[in-house]
Image (cartoon, rainbow, N blue to C red; front, side, top):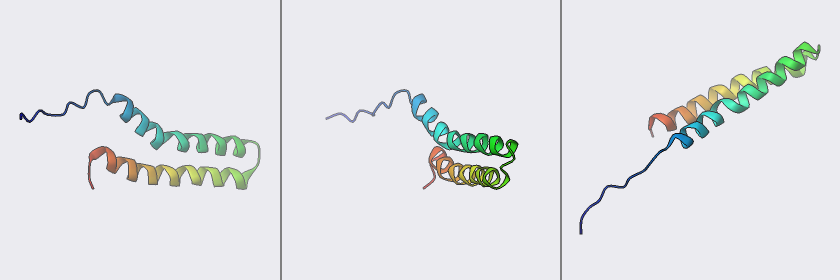
Length: 71
């Protein structure tokens, strides 16, 4: 029996989905934080901006590791 290589195909959609998971919620949290800060709600605005930064830091670590293929 011949060993045929597996052909994966086009994975552009998967990479796009990973980038959306990496940056999507962080951008949404940042927009909510800026809107709350502009409406003079300082404490919730700061919390959302910090949440955006933490989510971005963690998602870049996890999804970045997945994208470059390190265990």
